[in-house]
Length: 264
Image (cartoon, rainbow, N blue to C red; front, side):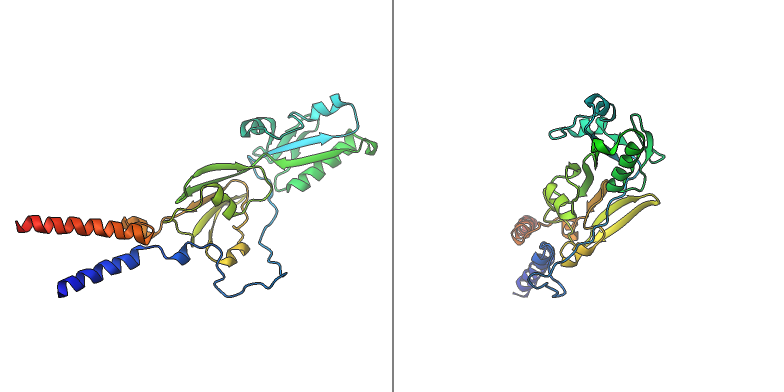
């Protein structure tokens, strides 16, 4: 009788420790009871991105002048809707090792460390100074040629992704990768980010509502996201109680069968 009780206790202990708690699967929980009242805004941390080496930017120029003149500056089609990643890459302007992009006629324009809005203002000012009059109603548009990032680890669809939007947060990026698996650690998601001085790694707890204030909540182009596995995965148990129970029953059946064979 004692042996049965001991065996049941061991199985129960394994079930409790091997299952992934529900609270480890829920995003943005109010752990500090700091729920905002209705109408009270919460501002996530989101600093503007500054261009770096190897970034690809799209520059579009419009004005009330001869279309042949505009064609000199615009190397890519005016309508970028439907363009592929490859065409945007080849038609865009790549920031070289010196921080410059080479624009027809203008030549090399340094944009390293600029936001896209600052780069737009710089290009527009140079065009107005040298090639266009105010009456031409010059319009310059500068954008990144796709928001690129990479997700790896415990996600359902890892790999490099490109989104055509200005801002992407880490939850959107993970959702676009099929979300974190049941055995992925949502409490310690790593975001590796490139800066001019080198790489920096941020750790973000996505089960905590305070995550929206993290500098890693809003991604920057070329970020690398890594989701490490929970210890339950290394033990070989399932993520849910049902999966874990199935594993335990299978193991117990094998042990019972082996015991009976040895007795015979």
